[in-house]
Length: 77
Image (cartoon, rainbow, N blue to C red; front, side, top):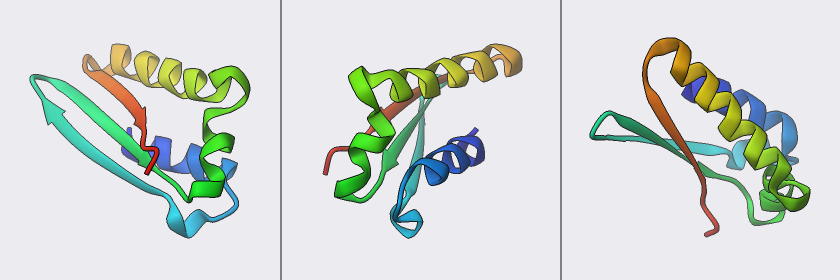
């Protein structure tokens, strides 16, 4: 899942070298935190959060297929 999210995010941003996905699993839920350059955060979130919502929907679909729960967060640091 981490590779899929990394691929999607790298296609959206200008600074591909700043993309960093941190994975952390707690109680069977894997949380993927997306870190990008400050100028690229808006591109990952999208207008009214539509791109972020699409990434979360994709993670939910993949999770249902593999029997696992995924949570996608976008870091604003």
